[in-house]
Length: 342
Image (tube, rainbow, N blue to C red; front, side):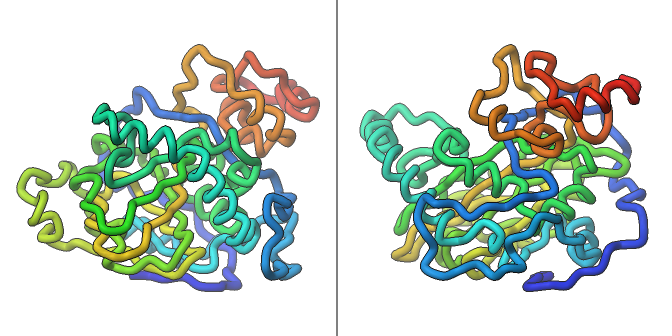
């Protein structure tokens, strides 16, 4: 497993991914939640809870890092890459504090749902796991982390320059609980000749060990046309899946992975909760806002063209025909519209 720590990466001199993994199949719909992060990028420290240590000046950056070609190569071959020290631009202490506030606020409703026996929600939301949605409503920190400068250049190589955020979730897999999901892939084997149509990033808030019900996948399974034999490997045989890889790493790490990989979460037999933050990314043209306009908090936060794109509102790269017409354009985007064709 490639594990990337602190880097001084060099810019790749080649064009990204021109070899298709499988023949192109047209994409009919998507699942954009409509969220994301900064522009070129004015990262700010968040006053929610002051950090116990100062952030190095190099992390208070107004520009993106260059991407590391080794990360992209590992992602394409194995379907994932783990990057350590990935949240320094935002601050691990602030992320933990924001997470704990959301968890405390949503815990009563989660507990009431579990006691009622009427279980609803994704990512195993129920007795074994607490899924916290709409986290952008709680603090702008989650919007900034969506466009984390440590991984955004890599995401643009994976998903395309018009990358947008389609999901952001906080998740807790409780200590001493069973697996909250079985083996699966997130959707059928839809592919594109050049880019990955759906990518996720899981941030580790604490050191992740194998006994914490860690996220697990089968490396390279994103190349396979079919999903996993989930009925053959379930319950007591969940960990018998051939090729299983348990993803571990220190706090502040992130795994960026292709959702076509066969994956699951295992039983958490440790005395510690497994706490992660989940982001999903897709090309700008894969979206499903429905008839509701984007949330006002997101529109207000998205005050640059790049932020608008990452929130799935207005494209900075690519076709403007997928733009939200119910949100006024920024002045600089109006100038762009005069020079492009829809």
